[in-house]
Length: 295
Image 1 (tube, one colour):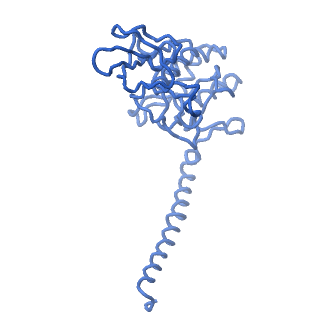
Image 2 (cartoon, helix red, strand yellow):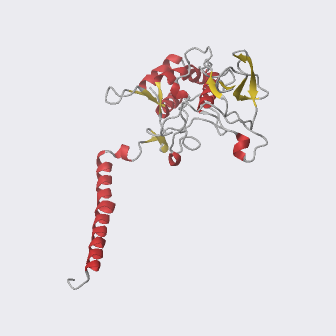
Image 3 (cartoon, one colour):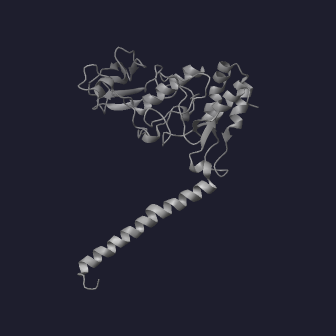
């Protein structure tokens, strides 16, 4: 070995290091960690899978949708919060929408667009929230009205021209013609409906708060979590849904609210975050009650 050139000895030393580290960090260490996890935290290590009648029905730590084949909410079940992970709660596409509070202007659908994206258009975060709130209000029989939202469930946003100075033109950019603008005029200027493919970027963006009261529909009902996989909803959102679920199942709403309380987790470490309701476990408790296996 001493007779080998120095550069060969260096390469052999590097190769030995790679082999040893691969065995330690790529083999032995993962096996030890996995073994300890399985021995001490078996349920957590395996995804906290929930079984029902011998079949896996979901995970306590991964949310899921409670909708029919067409994506419509199933009335007898509590609904999860929205998800931006794939088509909803896709663990292979975990993600947030990555849209922020300044995302308030839609791209209106253009039937004559150059591609499918242009023809379909896209909703801003504001319009997405407005549309979700309106839909939840209709589902649960409450007001879905929110500040900065129109009655037809889009963002109440104007583009005002010129960008500075006295307005001479105002467009409700999220309401495609022939929709009637949510307000008739702005500072004495008649408000127009939005036209697909027209460039309004030179105008000043003016969100209009309107006179909507404090929202009845809570924030977690209309916004997705950062991972898109959150299995919990707020107690407020669960309480909002309780009358609808009770009616659909022919139950006393007091009993449904008791099940909500049973499936509510406290703050982490007693002081972090807010109490939350596990949607899958709550819906399973409801099914148990209906089948006579619940308490």
